[in-house]
Amino acid sequence: MKAGQFSNEQIVAILQEVEKGEKTVTQLAQEKGVSDATIYAWRKKFGGLATRDTTRFRELEKENARLKKLLAEKVLENDVIKEALSKNF
Image (cartoon, helix red, strand yellow):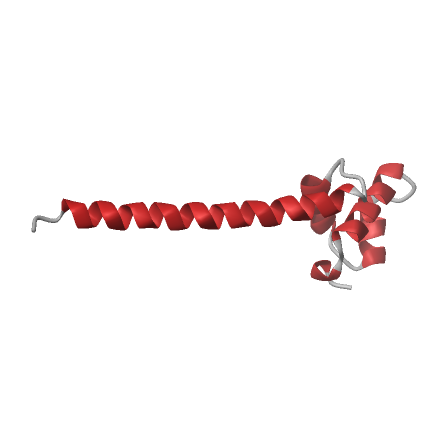
């Protein structure tokens, strides 16, 4: 299974296996078909999350993306207005 095919819940479950210490990161990576670097990247992103928190995390990521888009649109709008007002008519 490719890394993009894992759900957030599956990723957190894999990270919990690593935290238990029963298997090394390398062993789990080989078992799951991903690289060690992928597991470390997941740890950086999802470290400390419980499985139930991943849904909220996904919602927050979507909301953050929406807000960034709105901000970018407003900044662009303001730049266009400033440019239009700065021209001498």
